[in-house]
Length: 265
Image (cartoon, rainbow, N blue to C red):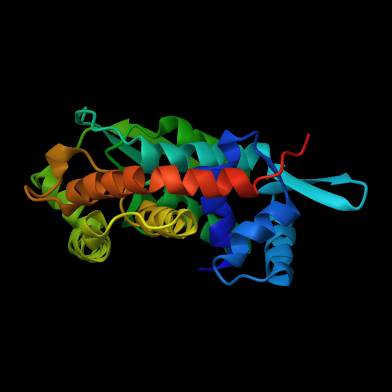
């Protein structure tokens, strides 16, 4: 596991619930269990600070870190999708974003595509991205953040073509690939339920790895409405397994993290 990914996992799973601020030394204690040494950890912290995800506070010779406003917004959305997903009925509407940018804005355009994918949209054509989910607020926030209002047009629309909605989804998202990913996740984590939780440190490592593995689906699975999914969608099985494994590991993991955590105040 890379240090940057571990930091995101730690903030989402624990640090945000114990004040949101943490000493570098505490992070180093957690990271050591994953074979990540302190110099590598410090490089990741510095990089995430430059990228606008973290902010640092100096206390004499020590440093403590917390999420920026941007980091908190991303963390809130990621945690909602990982820990508290919803299965609201589809309203039959598509959210559509169209953009056209000059070649001089290639970097912004590439960054926007990555953000749109993470948010849950998919390209219908290179400059037209769609989602059946109610993402208007998230889309508006992206457009404002990149200051690209003049290059973007958004719609909420009904599809009037002859293609069924399920066909449109299958054309824009790799459902077979996502299903295969869920099958691998289930095969990897199902044995844990029979094996038991283990020591506190083992629970900590396993729970962070569990969250890390499940969080990867945020980049490929937009959480489509049930009405648009295949009848046997393995994502539902994977979600139940994640929740069961998480509950099994929670007591031991929390004891380890609490014991290693040093308050910043």
